[in-house]
Amino acid sequence: MPEGKKRLAIICLHGSIDVAFATFVLATAGAAMEMETAVYFAFYGLEVLKKGKINKLKVSPLANPAMPVKIPNIIAMLPGMTAAATAMMKSWMKKSRVATLGELLDTARELGVRLIACQMSMDVMGIKKENLIDGVEIGGAATFLEFASQDAITLTF
Amino acid sequence: MSELTPDVTLDNSGLACPMPIIKTKKAIDGMQVGQVLKMIATDPGSIPDVQAWVSKTGHELLKHETEGNRFIFYIRKTK
Image (tube, rainbow over all chains, first blue to last red; front, top):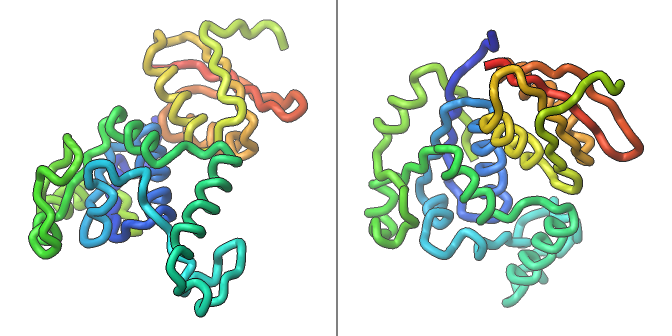
């Protein structure tokens, strides 16, 4: 019989394309590997769960020295550069036939991945339950830790 | 080898990680224990990933072969 941890517990703290991809690729793969999987979204990570946002997340070229196209910070700070970098990244991903974030989110829900929004972050950032997509659970630190404390690998993005 | 007759064939050509594994899981879920899935992928990462997936889930990788740029896996559902 297969061995190893039976659960995958992920914390997502950022609302940018790259972080959301890492989160959902690992979450869907975890569920496909028959691991009980939960993702806890806090602070900027809540952006990912807002209604209509999943395919509108961005990536910033500012202070990002690993962008495949090098953009000096003094240029990257100009209006429109985040949109340009986002469009570039999306075109590279499309060319490589990577699933969209929307598809990955749908897959995660279909595979039973638990999506948990941090209550405290919602309060701090003025986000209400009705601002979030359906099927999101709301919980606190204890909700996540109770899940993660039982035989889980934990990843933070 | 032609003695392996798949019950279900799944073509994941062109799809990037993690979709070949996700679609493999969904296909296996819809099959009977003992049936064989033939899964085709073009993502080179699918070779280690399918091996890792069967190792974790307990399904059996009967064989895998490469035909040009296509990787073909025969997986038996064990449970």
